[in-house]
Length: 114
Image (cartoon, rainbow, N blue to C red; front, side, top):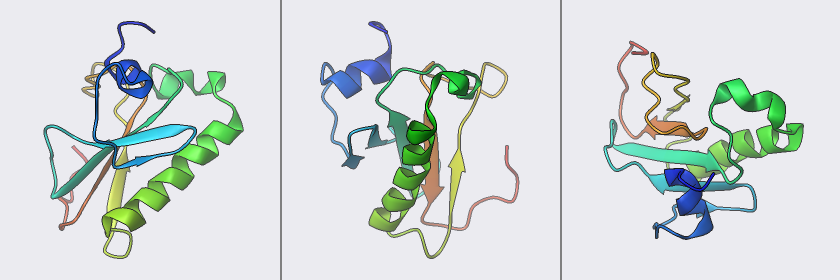
């Protein structure tokens, strides 16, 4: 997807300071952090949202979850706890139409999921 912001980051067209990267995912710091630690984990393949998971192989899905665990350990939040969130669609306030997950932690998070 040529106009996708995250695809441009993955392709190196927009420079990023990667927190973590492997063959299938890229992780960056969120530019508008909602917690002391707020990272964005995106697959390198373009999927618009969770609604497109039928287009992803099981290997990619496992890689995303595995990367979230690796990233939480690298960020030092795996023991104290973290939240993994993916907003899906307009009503959920998905701001970039590329599947991504927010990894939030480093502090006690609000009880509300909103």
